[in-house]
Amino acid sequence: VQLQASGGGFVQAGGSLRLSCTASGHIFSVDDMGWYRQVSENQRELVATVTSAGYTNYADSAKGRFTISRDNAKNTMYLEMNSLKPEDTAVYFCNADIARSRWMAPRNYWGQGTLVTVSS
Image 1 (tube, rainbow, N blue to C red):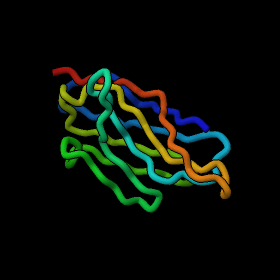
Image 2: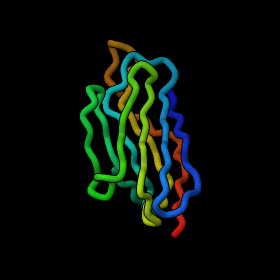
Image 3: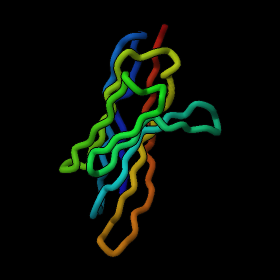
Image 4: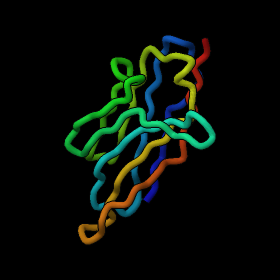
């Protein structure tokens, strides 16, 4: 099972980016998915999460500016980021709980990260 994140890049303050994360491999079900960002060498903070039913949760810093969504048929999650600020600059990681079969408990997986740089 792999999580592949994409969509990062360089943008000016006030701009927008859309991140994608696709789960691939031998997958029975994808449960909760989420985006996190690296804010220091040892700290990764929550940005937003979405359940398989579509319920969402956002960090205060993301509320009103970011929208998380998913396409269950494609095992893909998105993060639409608007009104970006320089403090949003970080490596963004996707995360998901994935079961490989109906007889296996879900395991937690991380994607490789995608860099978002917002200039002032």
